[in-house]
Amino acid sequence: MKVILLGELRGKGGEGDVVEVAQGFAENYLFPNGIAQPATPGNMKQLEERRHSIAKREEKRVADAEALKAQIDGKRVVVDAKIGEEGQLFGSVTTMMIADAIERQLGAEVDRKRVGKGQAIKTAGTHQVEVNIYREIGATVNVQVGKDVESETEETEETEEVAVAGEAEGEE
Image 1 (cartoon, rainbow, N blue to C red):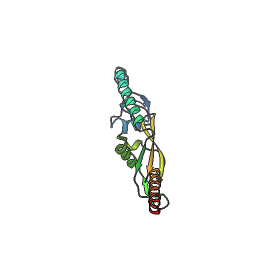
Image 2: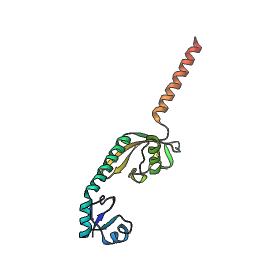
Image 3: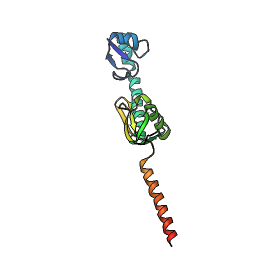
Image 4: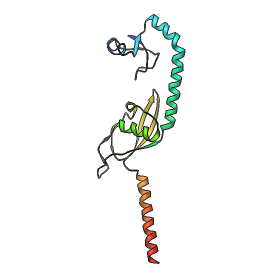
């Protein structure tokens, strides 16, 4: 059955697209939820009249998605989690935790359903997580689980330098 989408339907298309779906899916889900309407000749004529406004909205969505990508792509966020002795987490880092960290640390609001379609993060360290922003536009965020290893190393080196300097002063 051909339907006209009134909004984005993941895996099928976006607003104004005419797609083929199963009749039961259309009648039981798409039509009652206002996601699509039947592709009748009258509805197709209305769609042609609305194409310009749909294109403008799509342009704005793509521009917003590109701006969000520029804001978060390649950036690093830190997620605190309880870590065992061998670097294993007690539980795992969830997409909600990552989305909250992105919002708090980078100031960008991301839907948790669009964060990381991979396996759960169950070890400490840095992990690359994909964020699907809009259709084909995506970004990669580096998620640091637990304390930052680099800053730990720097702190240890500074502590050692202070200790060595203190010993040198005591010898004089």
